[in-house]
Amino acid sequence: MPAASTTLRMLAVSVIASLTVTGCQTFEDAGVAMGRSELVNDLTARLDRALELTYSADYQLPGGQSAAIVQAQDPARSAYTYPGGRLTVTPEAVTRCTTTGARPQCTLVAPPTPGSKPTVTLFGEANQQGLVTPPVVIGLLTAAALDPQAVIKQSDTTVAGHHAACVEVQGSSGDFTACVTTEGVLGSFTGPVDGKPMELALSRYSTTVDKDAFDPPADAGVVDRRPAGS
Image (cartoon, rainbow, N blue to C red; front, side):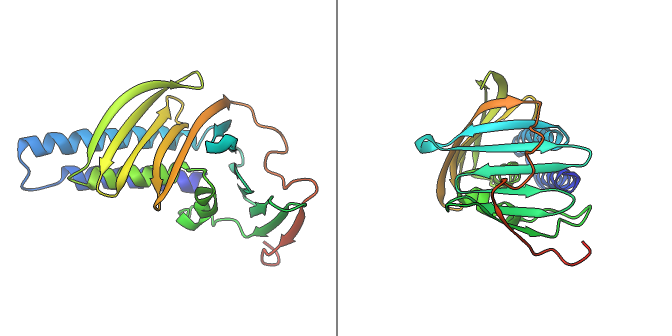
């Protein structure tokens, strides 16, 4: 979404500024700061570019469970499917569905204001159910870059047939490993989020999207809580 894209760009710029504009750094400290800022900027830029792509990504979760992220453009739409539910964001509505019962239940609320920043709560349910979203990864990388005690190591790997750059972080708020593909798609993540152990890995990536990817399930009960006229 354009709003999310703008937020990630601002986040990257603020991290770089806070790391490099320091009046009393030693040359060694400056080198460490620059290395971290460049790494955060590179991975942020990859994730940011992915927000402007059309793609479908399937993820493997622990215990044989699965999740998915789907995006399309013109207009910008996104859907996040995770165990027990799905979040869909379109220009018409934010739709939250629960799929744990005999019949899916969906609630429609007003969409984000064009140009506004996405809130953490928008992705809260997905995170709680095991789908670590790109904005959360950006937040973790930012915290690690600002942590003077953090150790950040970089490596490369292949995930679902796609090259990915990875970072292994050892920090005061927890250790995690994140990989981002060349296309900018989250390739894998292992580590705690809000104190909960999380793990996922990309299992399939496609540049095509099903035509009904952003529609509520066909048999879902739908409650529309959008203001009249929205």
